[in-house]
Amino acid sequence: MLPPHRPAPDCRVAALPRRALFALGGAALVTALTPVAASAAVTAAAPRTDPFLLGVASGDPLPDGVVLWTRLAPRPFEPMGGLPFVSYPVQWQVAEDLAFTRVVRSGTATARADYGHSVHVDVRGLKPGRDYFYRFRAGAHLSRVGRTRTAPAASASPRALRFAVASCQSYTDGYFSAYRHLAAEDLDVVFFLGDYMYEGAVNSVGGIRMDTGLQLPDVFELATDTLDLYRLRYALYHSDPDLQAAHAAFPWVLTWDDHEVQDNYAAGVPRFDIPAGDFLVQRANAYRAYWENLPLRSPQRPTGADLRLHRRIRFGDLAEAHVLDTRQYRSDQACGDGLRAGCADRDDPRRSLLGTAQRSWLLDGIARSGTRWNILAQQVMMAEVRYGGQPPRLDMDKWDGYAADRRKLLQTAGRVPGTVVLTGDVHFNYAADLRVDFAAPASAAVAVELVGTSVSSASDGTDSTPGLEQQRRDNPHLRFANAQRGYIRCELTRDTLRADYRVLPYVTRPGAPIATRASFVSHRDRPGLGPA
Image 1 (cartoon, one colour):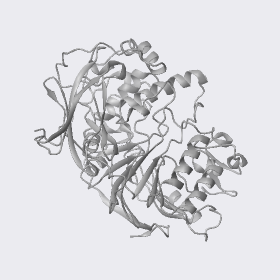
Image 2 (image 1 turned 30 degrees about the horizontal axis):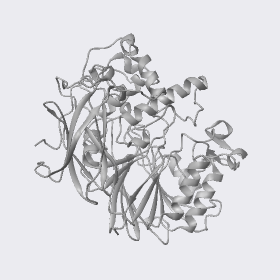
Image 3 (image 1 turned 90 degrees about the vertical axis):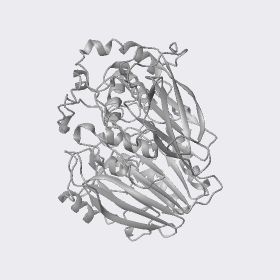
Image 4 (image 1 turned 120 degrees about the vertical axis):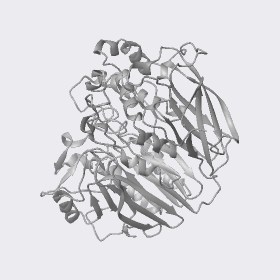
């Protein structure tokens, strides 16, 4: 039996010259842009050293199954994880007990070289609403054990759903201590809302972590744009022991934001001045690496520069989670992006944050869900936030820059009780009441929004800032604002939502304790956040 946690892997390698990395660049580029006609040959020989240094994960729970993930990489900080371009058989098991005396499903998957030796197993035939344990084997090497949980049966009426909200985990900005605490919570699922990795340079000691034992190769000082570079960056993140612990503890439901590709990109429009065709190549590489390195099903596997990430996860008749993508289909940010005052284009009904197809999918799904609650797992802040001035400045990258889309969504929420919006992106905690017309502060709220701070991005935070205090004065629908790091722990019952904002005093050194900074409650039939 494996212990529940393993020590952090020693992933040190000698520095690689840039040309060594790009020796694989051409092949990687082609596989990111075009479908693969045939996989590399499968070898019966397993890797000689432990290939499971990047941990295990599960995701997207269904009543009868989950997705299991791992990636073979005995030398994670080398191209292809230190493996040759051949595929490997990987055995997997799912059991009802930690000792694996009651194995209920098992099989053999292929860690395909053309998918970075990642493994995605869509396990079916499990019982609803149950905990299971899983593991992988490659030759004589066993992975750590992961725990997962299936969703309740579609016809079930669960008493409660317990979940956490996390986002924005910059490796160079600090330690992922929040995840060690999150792994110890009593949860059914984790919603991760974007910025799983950051595309900028990483020095040999991991930025502010100043980890002299890390000894990252020089290629990490390159911003990510090729498939090889994206794969290496995910390997760095997955090497973190706290992130590994959180993935091994619960199933995750993930969506992306911008940094998985490039900061503030909009569909096919890059933030920086590069040719549109080159940017789509970069986007294809980023999307391919995203799917390879996370527990996602085959329908989410990208085709070139396209990946359908929006989907639904149902938890009996209690809640349906609508997982959104506010990057791939959006109109370019209005008025040149950033904070803008008096931008008329933000009200243009032809502009969309979701794209017309996804917006119709969402509005129809909310209206037809039939569950007590609708959870919108998405990226950017939906509540209006005035940043001062007259007229006030608004952020064009957020829903404030796409007012017509927001109005249609909140009008639908006003007709369907129980809408909860989960948000990441901004590296602050907020609790907000959502109104169709934010200019009418006395009007009734139609939904609530829980904005989770970052896990590490922006480094050590503070309880508040002068800017946050001014926002509270200028935006009466903001019930709470906080600038510390952490996550949100939530519980949905048949009639109420409770949110606990869990915060850390620091992330620039390991081992931070955790505390609950604030707790709020909202009622399904009377939306509006109040102190718990």
